Amino acid sequence: MIPGKKHSLSLLALFGFGMALSFETEAAARFGTGCQSDYENNWRDELPHVWKRCGWFNNELDDTDTKVFYYNLHDAKWWWETGGDQLTLDNVNLFYASTHGGGWSDRSVWTMWNKNTRADSTQMRLGDESYGLSILATYACETLKFNDGKMWTRMGAIFRGGLRIALGSHDKLYDSITTDETGEDFADNLQKKHTIQYAWKDANSDWATSQDVTVMATGNSAASCASRRDNMTWQNYTSYGRLRDGAITYYCYRYWSDL
Image (cartoon, rainbow, N blue to C red):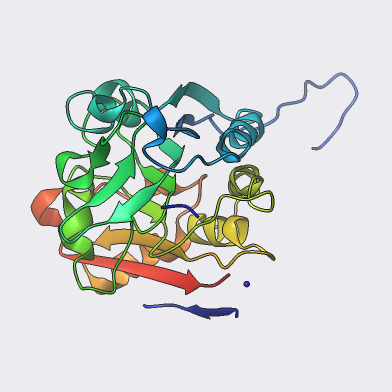
């Protein structure tokens, strides 16, 4: 669900007359957005600030990068999961979403508009089709829950496709007038070359609500996992090779509570 004590915890030209000027620019990356504010027959509470959160994220990031799609979550389960992700999530480098979420005993779930319908992490494998998703950023509660020791049970299927990093929450993220700018702030931080984990942490810190923020990565050693989690940026993420299936031997995460 998406509904203040503050502490944090972490685990592990030269110009010349008559000369042409040449400017180096970074290649634009691809991103997509999937968001939902209201739900069929009010089966879940409305989240009135979602459209600002997602729209402002798009407006900021498409100043520098390429927005491929911006969809609501009507009839969306199929394109989150393996049936259609090659057309959407795996067709971009970064996917940003805002909806209700949950960390169930054996899966993470994201709420779709349709009544009683949720995207299921165990039916998702990201990073191995089309462009291949690298960064999954979901403003949704509990989807990176870890305190029951079942984080990999819930998220392993997603990472086995080669996803590089996931951003979310281990508990609560709030929908409020003070968090409607979190998407825009995240995009701005990415453009300013902050590390992805701190772009997420900083963007989702809030003076009025107690935000619980988490990032997760994989590695083939404890050190490689920590390096990927701690040093990856929007500008360098492709320098971190994809890890799939048996090449993944470690997962790691960092979290902050009540930001």
